Length: 273
Length: 300
Image 1 (tube, rainbow over the protein chains, first blue to last red):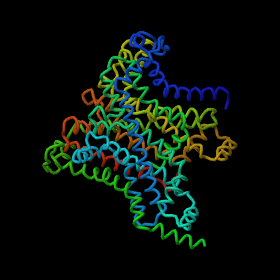
Image 2 (image 1 turned 90 degrees about the vertical axis):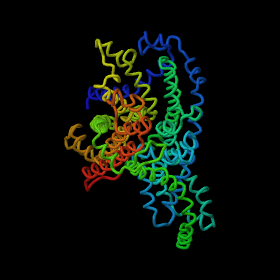
Image 3 (image 1 turned 120 degrees about the vertical axis):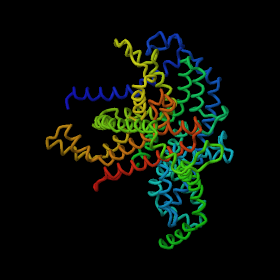
Image 4 (image 1 turned 180 degrees about the horizontal axis):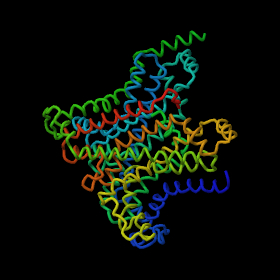
């Protein structure tokens, strides 16, 4: 292929990259401006007098609390999902029982269904056990709805674990619990890291469950929190921009440091569809 | 020694109590919070129910109403249009991936840049694109006016264009995801196959169409299913950006169901729509799988 051909191909790729990145650059720029600069200046002009105060104001104005809620709810659900998924994957791939394929199939139903179809019954179930407007309802749904994808990512890795290690441990008189927690779990650290980061992105970004189950401001996470917040600041673009940037920074940082894990998790979660 | 170890292990690994303990947490949660609600949706669909008070059994009435409900079919049509657009856009992603996988320097970095929008929450994407589409100060109309278009549309407020305006950020969100999948599949093709085609005198387009595409057809089929099913159940971004409006012109099946239940307290009818959404999604999945199935599908 000639030089011109390569330049053309690169131009195509660069245009796609620009399309993917431009709205975000614009967001960061207007998060640092005040309305006067946004409405009169060029949209791609650097902020002449960066308004870092936008960030401070929205953080103190309520975003800080939503951020904190997102952190602990995301974190707790990750721990539960990865632990329960690892235990279940261990039982399915390593233990001897007849129904293991059937149970695995049941788990995989969770990958195919539209979650909205389950929303109304979930709401009425939580209502009847007094979990509506209780953060436990979101922790439980996040934990549960991420189990199928997490098990699917773990599954391939568990199938490749050598049996000899387990046999040696069992011969040494190790119990199942010791085998699982001190030998198997540490061996699966790389794939667990992938599931942790995928779970983090899903939980951090989840919207429907919080929006449906939580009504008090004190339990709202960032996604629903910024939705209300932006109502308040409807005309102050700088504050809206700062709010959005704060909400996306954690996943962008995670991507910056663990991009290979993210890529691995997303591709393995999709291709088996 | 080896067989002794194996039989000892078989015994340990057949311990019914331990199997139950290890499978129980995941099985219990999935059964109670996924499987049971799915069944209940169909059941609630047979009820007249406002979500709080008592239920009245009304048989198939909700389902019959749904079939005669123009607003439901409008929302189903919008979901179908989204599915169509998402599927057609796969062609673009495939082309981009083909370029990306043809010994391009920086391909790894580029595919990661493409992926960034997929990592953001739908709420953040929706709020950002509401600003992009802002009629007075949004970046889109600023650019359009800059190139001499006097009266650019008020995108999200215009019932004729709102649906298509919403499709753009949805495609923006998922482009990197599909490119990632195609890129990975293309990188799996042995270099020798492409090399020998080149020696036989095939040009890059022929190689792409006659060699690469058939080899990744299994993956392409999976992405078609993902794009269609994902579109049929799509909700978040549309709900945040327009709430289905103006006057239902961007309503999709899931947002219609959500509004019925959580805005108008019509839980019985909402459940019936939710159940239809489930059935439609499952039926479409099975149909596409059947239509695209072939014996030599490569398993990745």
